[in-house]
Length: 243
View (tube, one colour):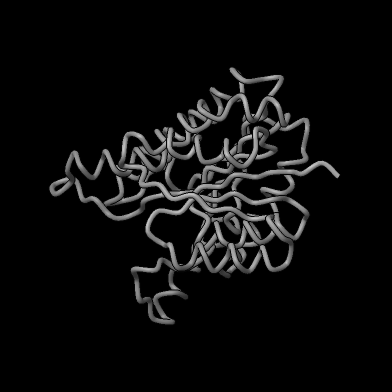
């Protein structure tokens, strides 16, 4: 059987972790990137390789390093020369009120959320062409309409959606490029929300509940096989964006 390879950035935690395991369950070989979560990344690799030998590989890179894309491309090339799917999932996320926002913060947020997805796609183009692969970018359902105190992050994610649509035109018909735009899937790690605070936030979600990481990985799996869909940003947000 021909091996199918997926490469995903930010695969050690949260949505990335679930996506790695979901695609592995579907028979894909997994290559995923991590930055600082080495312990978590190794645990996932060991778990998946125990299920199927030599089916999961990990690569480390810091996207604030200008050589990170080259480092990852070289790492992938030692494993395979063909990719079925590239998922640009890694993201920096934190508030940047305008009066305190800095150029360093902008450079960090634009690097992880827009620049790296763009130039990683460029660097892995030959891998995707050989595998007749597709690109899936992970955006944010609220970013294009703006998020108070998150202007830099919102700008970076909005750039990612523009990149998605532009590359869909540029790389067609060989490579499809789409984005998934999650809403409230997991509560932020850096916020200790009370039950009342959680309920208050969910009032803005028509389905009235938080999502599950598998809601995102399931759409990614669908898009990987949806041969007549490109240039789309699919919102998975419980209806949050329609309010």
